[in-house]
Length: 284
Image 1 (tube, rainbow, N blue to C red):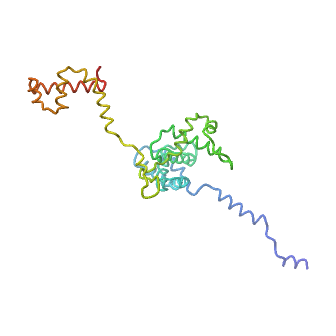
Image 2: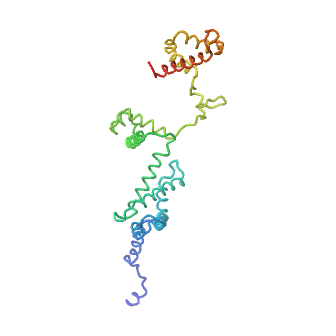
Image 3: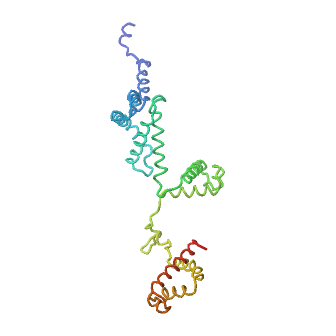
């Protein structure tokens, strides 16, 4: 009987036998990305070649082999105001730089390419996506203030950090913090056609901006020329007055003064040049 029971009794699955394949599968999933091909031999060949058609073909082959990895890195930066297609192009540019600069003697290509491509994409965001060109110093202030504000406000219920709080956190002056805060709000521009109020008689942003006033330029020019006119000889001042204020012709002025028209023309040119030079600070 015991022998019959032992043969008909259902066997309990062996735990060791059942769990071993799972561990093997889990180990397999932890391997390198599928977009990290083994190109060690190709890079060794590339390093041994001089510039030429053969090296160019091999370089293109390596770029094509690693391009999926560049696209994966670009995907990390999606939903940040830039299209995926543009991000992929920037990442591909970083990949080309990595292939050109990589030294096989310094380790695996992936460990060199990933930070190179990532840095290229980050530089793209830093330098290209501002609606207006912002100095790098201001961009760095913006980043330091942004990180400090995030750290100070990360606890639930924390009040909005003040300028003084941010200055103490970052080691910046309050003026520098203010500049960084302004840059945080200036990543994109607002259209001049944007409506400031609702309704049919709403005003655009452009309506609030001033326009150049031409009368100011005339006033400045008159004041600048006034001193130079005072220094002219009396006859030259009279000639300029008759020509430009009474609108007399050069021939008529010549008749009034008893000189030739050519002489009047030379006096007008010389006087205007002298007044202009003094107005511009060219002479004293």
